[in-house]
Length: 135
Figure 1 (spheres, rainbow, N blue to C red):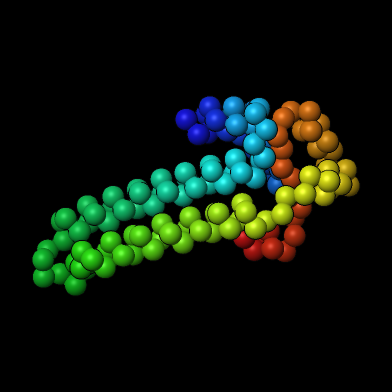
Figure 2 (cartoon, rainbow, N blue to C red):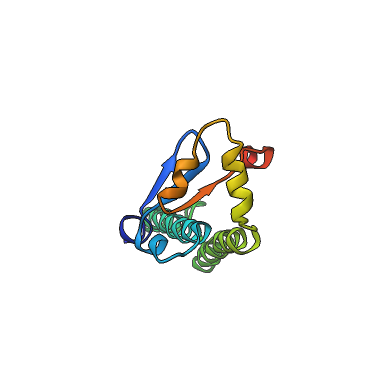
């Protein structure tokens, strides 16, 4: 629902750019909010899958095994992971200033001609910096 209907992203590789044509993008939701929602959904899906593997592992591990977790500790770790990942996504969405003029200037001076994405709907372009490579 999120990726196929609401967001419908089109990443542009190798450039760190993309645009979307989904329902959220058509009604004017900024691209970094759409990316935040999609990232949150995918991260929570991944953590749920990991949680299923850990639960299955704990179900078949013997009671006396060193690999057996305390149920309270396993729940605390799961909730801490979900909280930390959710806070990091929200921090990126709400604390990262998304300046449309800055993005347009970066598109204009880019070595690759990507100015055509302005006509496709909501778009984003992130300049490749040392921080981006680190992330």
